[in-house]
Image (cartoon, rainbow, N blue to C red):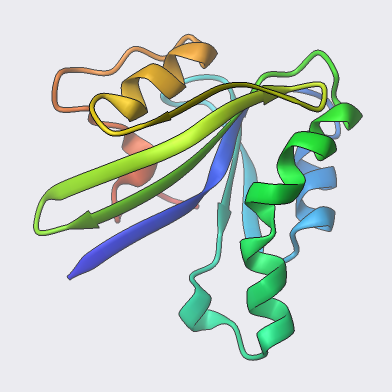
Length: 137
């Protein structure tokens, strides 16, 4: 069985969870205290969407996120797409702040490099709790 994640992680900022939930209503946004103190947003799976418009809005996060970060100009935001199957995961994403993409990464150690911008250190297996199926979103 496969696992996908589309969403972002960010430094904590007042109002960020509420703003993200309003911008992307087909998501779960929350304050995180593990593995870092910040904010996480996970988009629903495309299979859970009922209309083409909902799917398009869901997939617009990647394009809309950089400009949305202008609402929180001092906050670093890391977008991540994870695609896992059979225990193997591939990651890609970018780091943005105040409307600008600062770093883009895919391939080898992408998750480690992306999350390092939030001060998160991963082990060699790139274990990240919010990507576990049992994580409470």
